[in-house]
Image (cartoon, rainbow, N blue to C red; front, side):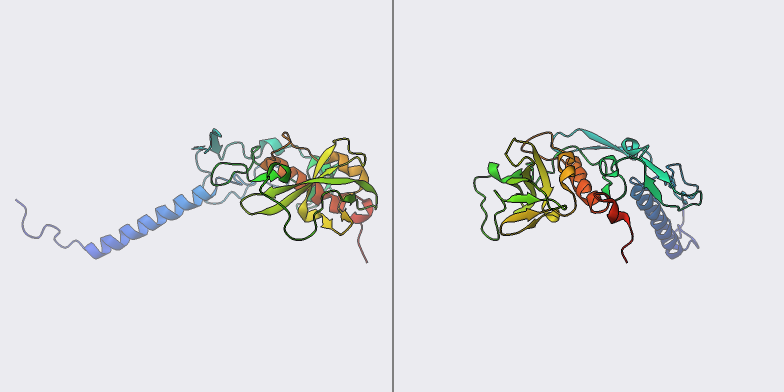
Amino acid sequence: MLGNNFFGNFDLASAAIWLFWLFFALLVYYLQTENMREGYPLQDDDGNEAPNQGLFPVPADKTFLLPNGRGKLTVPSGQRRDRDKLKLARTGVAAGSPYMPTGNPMTDGVGPASWAPRSNHPELDAHGHAKIKPMSALPDFKVSAGTDPRGKAVVAGDGEVIGRITDMWIDVPEQMVRYLTVDVNPEGTGQLRMIPINFAKIKSDRVVVRSIYEAHFTGIPTTKKADQITLLEEDKIMAYFGGGTLYADAKRSEPVL
């Protein structure tokens, strides 16, 4: 039969503090491994597994059920498989040597023209509707301030007129213009491309796009649907214009004194 002193000389305060430290250590381990579901295992510049992986292992695969009927996503498996074998070559044998493009960097998606393998579905708002839509499909929207670019000529970085703006794409929840639609044939043949609003300067009589030249407009990545743009398509279009700031003209790669 147990006496009144069940714990005897057992130190409850010491047990409590040790249990706290154990819980804290397990919490740190859990949070760190969950944080490694993207970007791990670490790789070197050549795409091989780096030797400095750290103290914590890569977590086991976890499958997430995506909302709005978009299936499942398993991480960290297959994080970079569709971006392997990039058209880049190292310029030296030393670690950290810069890489130079071996093909057309603007279409190969390297350097400042790099894009990430995002979801090939449109970004949705809180109600499950596509956030970004053409203004022509939004009868409740109109230009209430500033200059309406529709109908204005588009001038490329080399000074050539390449077409006219035919539409604007609106981020509906934010009520902001995200893209401009341009017909790349001045006679209006329906060869439509999208220009990120960040790379367009709207003037009173024209829209100026300095990052790319006339010859590059037909190479702008297109969208699968006329009234939707996916996250992957957005990334590729933005990357194309971003890459043009360096690759559109060989002179842009030279030092400026």
